[in-house]
Length: 628
Image (cartoon, rainbow, N blue to C red; front, side, top):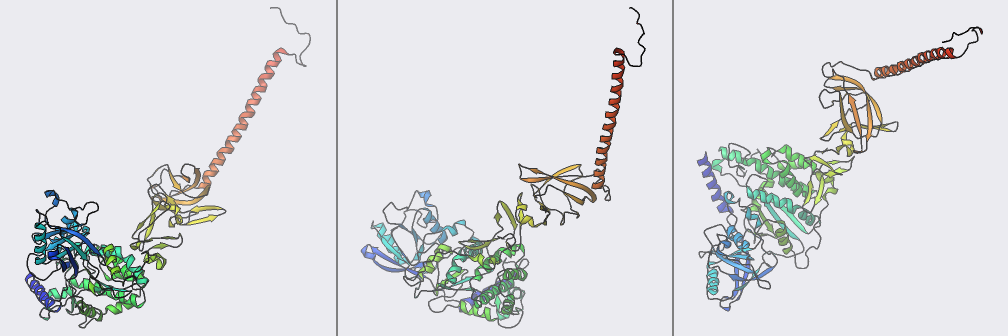
């Protein structure tokens, strides 16, 4: 199978070489102002990394190091620095081609303080475009951190510069990008050739990072009419001899007319190339429908949202997931499906056929063979795919004095809530507008953190969750008192009975004689008919006491000893009050009897004592007492 696929790849390459073979090397001017022996204007090729100064110029002096002339090693090892002194001109480092990647040369030059790097070719040939390493070597972290411009110069010019420097002459040059991009009028047209595949390694990651960062500026420029943007997607076709092969069937749609490489480069697992082609087609159709609705800028939202919500790694790279994203943005899903058409039909797809035709260069623009590729005013952009660098290049595409002076700021949350989650009752939204465009992130409101995906679901969490919209639970005011179904503990919100007066609720906790929980409500007391605890029905009185320290009410509930053992155990709150009242009455009666008996006893004792010392009216007056 691998051998057959290898032959297939070779055939594709040959076909691409015939029909997509006109690759244009984008150039800028290099003007040597001294020494006089080599003074003149030369062409150099702009590197496909770093940040070219589109629309501007950069003047500096050229240095050719005595050691590490290929710049494949760190210059600190040789105790060499190219940082310019205060008041001095920037330093342009001249290095030899070969022995390591172009990007590594630029990175080492930048770390040593050079303002630009000039790579001298090692053979007499036409200028080529210096590109980033192939996928397997493109994981170096420094690639996205290269910010200096780079240029490849011819071998003859390189030899002349080296000779002048060797003889001790100061070589002064000017790098000029003012004409690198056409700037005919007050509107810039640009294209972005991209891919929905998110499993192609660092290039896919950096491409998506650019889309996220750039979309806010892109949408404002488009809405204000300063730019006209069109996204594009590269597809290949399967040679007729291989139409029935397993490879073509798994990597192509419409009977081999439109193909893409396998995302994981493994036919036995994951998604196939045809899945990528279909998603590319869906994104192209989304732009077509949105453009017809005069909202082409929505494409940026769809692409970023799809990448976040429907990644391959989570097995969500599907039509269902894509449809949910489309619906959240308010675009007609029926029209998009109609645009996609039947991907199994043995016929041309108008959208993808137009994409294949657009790959072939016209006029000053070369064929598009590299992903991603940015084309500005029909000229391919070279350099780092970075928001600031691309904005600078787009601004260079405006006719002088017609550049927009607007501040790139968006307010995408005003319409359709940006396709994000919202709670209209509590006036809370997950849509947050940033300089990068809108993002859907569950918010933090009054110290309450919401958790969820930000698109379809956000839920309050934490100790103060009942403060926001009563935690989404039941709440009712009766006779001036508010009853809440939101139970708040220090760990998480619990849902109390849907109707506190009479419904059952599941109360967390084990069998215990008493428990204390915190409930945010304004009532002082209330009675529940029954509460279910581990299947046992317990009827009780719920008393609330205000806790000043927590600013809430403390709810204490008691549970019968056999709660959880017998699901039918019931204790009537009325019966309990009757017992309490009976005890109070019995105590009062007992106290009365006690008081009555004590009083009679005391009266009898007093009369006996008084009788010994005082004569009574009924005793005889002639009784004599004997002497003692």
